[in-house]
Image (cartoon, rainbow, N blue to C red; front, side):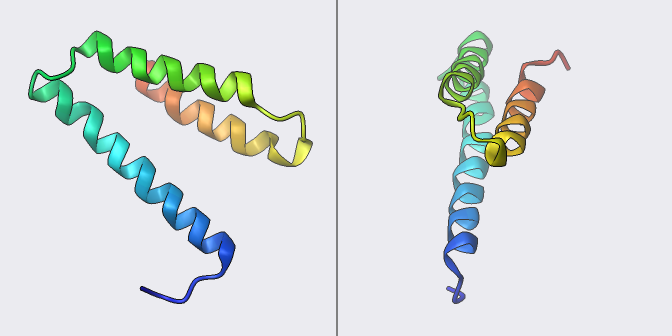
Amino acid sequence: MPDLDPLESVAASGLVSASLIAALIPALVDTGVLSPRGAREIYENALLMIETQQSDDPSSKRIYEAARELIESHLRPE
């Protein structure tokens, strides 16, 4: 594993988590473990969690906006 500074380590960890979840939800739907409605509820709950836990700190506003936008993209009809 490369020698990363703390910010790079956090970013890499977040990327791994996001990638796994992004791959897992559709795979669960494809195998019938999760219904399309169930998948939608996961994204809706994730969006609600971000909205209710969002900080008032202006320095993190863009991060929360980007996260909401990414989750909302999964909620739009294809």
